[in-house]
Image 1 (cartoon, rainbow, N blue to C red):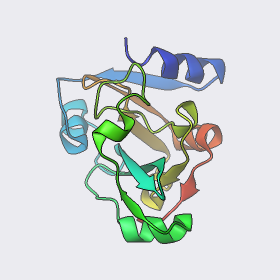
Image 2: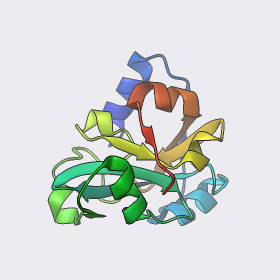
Image 3: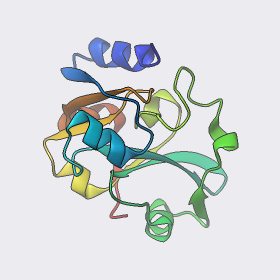
Length: 151
C-alpha cells in the first residue's frame, strides 16, 4: 500500500485520520467528486521548483498555483512548476501525481493557500489514485509547519 509511510507517521504522532477509498481518479477535482469531499476541503499537492530547490505548494482542488505570488512569498528569484522527471524519485511509494502534501517526509518545504487553513479539515491524496486521507487541518499544520501563502 503506497501510503504506509504516511499512515505510520500519522499513527506515530497520534493523529486521528480517515482513509477514504474512491474510484480511480487522477485530478484533484475528480478525486474530490469521487470521494464526496467538498472542493474547498480537498487539497491539491503541486511540486514546484524555487531557485533550483523542490518545494510543495498546496492549494484547493479547484485552484492553480500563482507562481509569482509564491516566488515573492518564498523570497525566490524564480518559481516554476517542477517537471515530473525532476521529482520522480523523491516520493518513494507514491504513484506519480498522487503525492501527499507532507513535504517534511520528503525533505521539502510546504506552502499552503490560506483557504485550506480556514477549514477545520483537510483531505488529500494518500500516495495513490484510489485513496485519500482526511484529517484535522490543525494536525496537518502541527506536523508540516507550512508557510501560509495567498497563491
